[in-house]
Length: 203
Image (cartoon, rainbow, N blue to C red):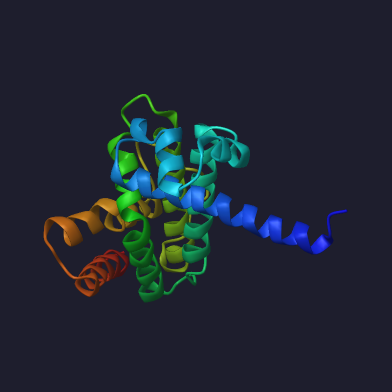
């Protein structure tokens, strides 16, 4: 008869293997085109057999979905903690996120126009989340919402400011400063915060 202790140990080992497979999937997503993140490549990076990957995650798509879910949970845990109305804390949390996950997101965005539904879905979800984050974090500092919803073609003052804040805190601003111009993390955070404050103070 199998002892409960043995089952516990096996369960922990299985969880570690599943996590290692997701770590491998994420590493590959950061390094190569999405089409090249294959089951054999994932298995080889994780140091397991393909059948082990299938046993834990069902398929290549299962690996991608589980990786996206884990990355998304990590991002939300980091950015959802930003207190509303605290510009410095919000920008700090944002830059922490970009430093950690920026390379992966940039690679997925570069593949969005292609045929990979995974990249398109991840990009769309990220845009929706980022706008909601901007509205929550800077909401107390924004003009009041209009009584009736504005049209898409003629946004309210609040919507226009939200658009500007979304643009000012976009991942590509981080890329421009950190990668293209070679600015330090501290300088990048300072520039983004200065831009956000300027936009808020101008209203």
